[in-house]
Picture 1 (tube, rainbow, N blue to C red):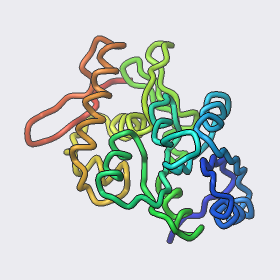
Picture 2 (cartoon, rainbow, N blue to C red):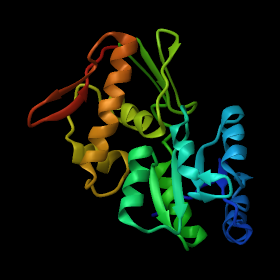
Picture 3 (cartoon, one colour):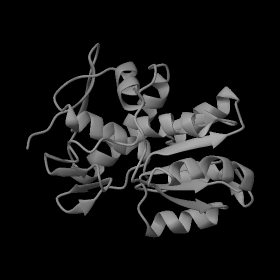
Length: 223
C-alpha cells in the first residue's frame, strides 16, 4: 500500500500557475504546509532560511535552470518534476543530487507516491558513529561538533550506510535501497560515494567508508 504524505512541509519550485493549481490542493488537503517559489532566487532564499521535508523542482524557470539549486548544502530530498523526458537530462539530475525524477504531466496521486518514497523515515533519526552524528529529521551531519556539508544524495547514502554500518553493499544494492528503484544507475552511486568519502576523510582524517573488491562499500565505525 502506498504511503500518504501528510503533516509535512513541502516546497514547490514551479512557475506554471496551472500546474500548481492542479497539484498543490491535494497536498494542502492532507495537512501539509505547501510553500511555492516561482524562481530559483526565491527558492534559494527559502531554502537558506527554512527547513522542508521535500522539494518538488521544475528545471525550466524564469531566471535559469532549476538544477542549479542542487548544489546547495543540506537540502531535503529533491524530486525533479519536468516535462523534459530525455534520459541524458534525467541522469544529469540524478548525478547532481536529485532523489527522484518525475516527468510531467503527472497526477497528484503519482507525485505523492514518489514523494513518500523519498522522504526519509523517522526511525533511526539520530546516529552517532566514530565521532560523526547524523540527524535524519534535521538532515544535519556533524563531526565532533563541526558541520559536514553534504548534498541531498550524499546525505541519503551516508544515512543508509551508517544505519547499516559494518555491512557491505554494492552499487546496485545501494541505489535500490536508497532510491527505492531498480539499481541501474551504478555510476551515479559511485560518483556520490567518491565525493562523500572525500568529504568525510577531509574532516575526520579517517577512511570510514571502505571498499572491498567483490563486496562493495561499507561504513566502518563504532559508537
